[in-house]
Image (cartoon, rainbow, N blue to C red; front, side):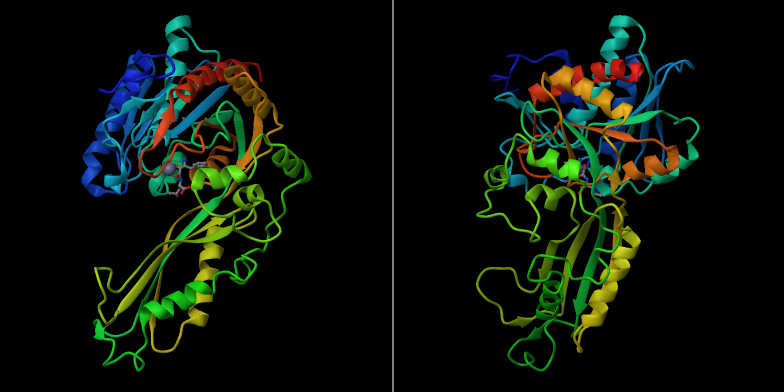
Length: 453
Ligand code: BES
Ligand code: ZN
C-alpha cells in the first residue's frame, strides 16, 4: 500500500476502516456486482453493531438498506443520518492512476471510487457517532443511521421503504454529507438540491443499416433527424425551449443572491476546475444561479452509426440519446417528461419512428437554512472547520431528500464535504484526509449542537 505523505503522515484506525469499506466494488447499476453491494451492506451493519448500535440489513426489491440505531431515549431529539454506500461505475478504467477499488493515500488524498461519493462522507459520520459512544458511553441525541445501496440509480425502492418504516424512522431532522464544499477549508451548508428527470429518445428509419449512396437522400437518416430534434431543446439564449418548462420556476431570493455573490470563490474557479475555455449557459444569470437555481436540459450520451477507424458510408438504421433535466422548486419531474415527449413528437420529421422512454426522476429540494436546525448545522461546521460557513444550493440531485420531507415531515441539513476537484463519478475520485477528519469532528459537534437546538 502506498503510504506517502497524508496530512497526519500515517494510516489511522479510522482510515484503515474507510479503506476496508472502499474495497467493496458496490456498483449499484451493474447487476454483476449484486453480491458485492450486499457484502458492503453486511460489512457496514457489522461495523456499526461493533460500535454498539443496534443494526441490521433490510432487503428491498433492489439492493439492501442498512439501518442502525442508538438506544432511543424519549427525552432527546432524534437525528437521522442518511448516506449511500453504492457507487458509480468506474469506466473509463484506463484513466485511473490506481485501481479504483484498491484505495491508496497520495498527497493527503484518499484515492478510490466512492472515496467522496459517498463512502468517505458517510463513514465520517458513523465514526463520529462511534467515537462519542466509545468515549462517553452515550450520545447527546438519538441517532438513526440509514445507508442505502441505490442512490446512484435514483433510489427506486427507498420511498416504499420509508413508508413501510415510517414510525421507526421518526426523527426531528436529517443530516446528510453527500454534497459539495465550495473550497478547501470553507465549511458549506447546502439548503437546496436540484431535482432530476431522465429519459431516452430513439429515432429509427430503415429496418437495417443502408448504403448511404444507394439510399441516402431518399430515406431519412436517423442520426440527422435526432441531431435536429436535440438542437431544438435550447433557444439561442441558452433557455430550454420546451413549452411550459419554466412554469412555476421562481428567481432566487435576494438574500441568496447576496450570499452567493459574497462567496470566497469566483466563477473563474469553474474554468480552472473543468478546463473549459469559457463559461456557458442561460443568459442573464451568474454561474452560481445557473448551477443552483436554474433548471437545465442536458444530453448525457448519444450513439448512432459507424464509430470505428476511417469512414464507412452507411445510413444508420437508428440513433439514440440519453437526456436528463435538472429541476428546481416549482417543477414536477412527471410534467417535465410529459412536456419533453410532446416537444419531440410534435417536431419529429416524417420518415422516422420516434420512441420516447422515461427514466428515473427525483424532486427538487429547498429548505430555509436560517431555522434552528440550520443554525445548529452552522455551529457544527464552524467548530469543525474553524471558519464561518457559507450557504449554497446544490446543482446535483439526491432524489430521496424531498421524499424524506414528504414521508417523515422533516428538513435535511446538507453538510457537504465534496471538494470541487474530488472527481466524483469520474476517474481518480478522491477525498482529502483533511475533510475525512473534519467530517468526523463535524459529526461530533453536530450531535452536541442538535441536542441544544
Ligand atoms: N452525491 C451526489 C449528488 C451531489 C454531488 C450533490 C455533488 C451535490 C453536489 C449523488 O451521489 C449523485 O450523484 N446523485 C445523482 C442522482 C441521480 C443518479 C438520480 C446526480 O445528481 O446525478
Ligand atoms: Zn453520486
